[in-house]
Amino acid sequence: MRRRPGIGGLQTAATARDQYRLLGENVAKLRTDLMKEQLATFRSQLEDFARKHKNDIRKNPTFRAQFHEMCAKVGVDPLASNKGFWAELLGIGDFYYELGVQIVEICLNTRPHNGGLINLQELCDLLRQRRKGDRGAVTEDDCLRAISKLKVMGSGFEVISVGKKKLVRSVPTELNKDHNAILELAQAQGFVTVDEVERRLSWTTGRAIDALDTLLEEGLAMIDDGHRDGKRRYWFPCVSSISSAVGD
Image 1: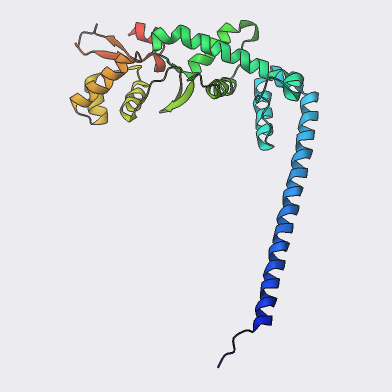
Image 2: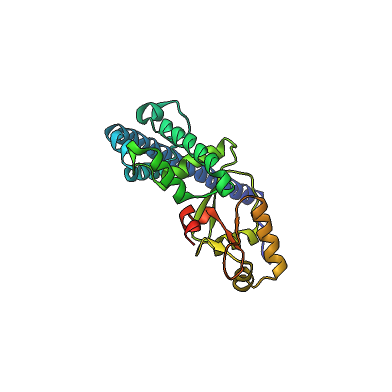
């Protein structure tokens, strides 16, 4: 018959477990301290790098994007505040603040045309036109970073993906799956018809008209009835240019 462990054996086992636990905690603390030390070293090296290349970071958009990637890897956000080391050294906080203000102005000016939903690429092009003295120095990455800061401030700005395009929304419009499906379908020509929506998406007439009417009410679509075939076109400025709409 197998004997059960006595009190001494149980105490020995408990002591061993406590020792293993303490050993594990010590190892974990050593690893944490080592990681903190490595991060501190990386951040110091990042500051030295920023001092050395600050002009490239300010003027070269590709270099600036790569610098942001390096910052993210060590938990540094140069845009977290307009004050402090990074803002004083690089001035990029002011750069993105200025971009943010210009993005708001462009979205407000184009809202009567696009209903508050603008193609990210078009927004960047308009920004470059506005910053003529600094043409080409603003990238989509810069726009996205500036918009992310606007979003943090609760301004209602948001970037959404529809198909292969990224759209910037500056009004609190709620788009459901049907609306997104129509916007994605419109990317090919800039417009859709009720027949096309029914055929391509396998929808009923009622479902197609309901979704299109909602997009019209939100100001995201424009009606074009001037065609020989008698079919109404629903144009979407957020996925097409004004020139393409006029040219057809």
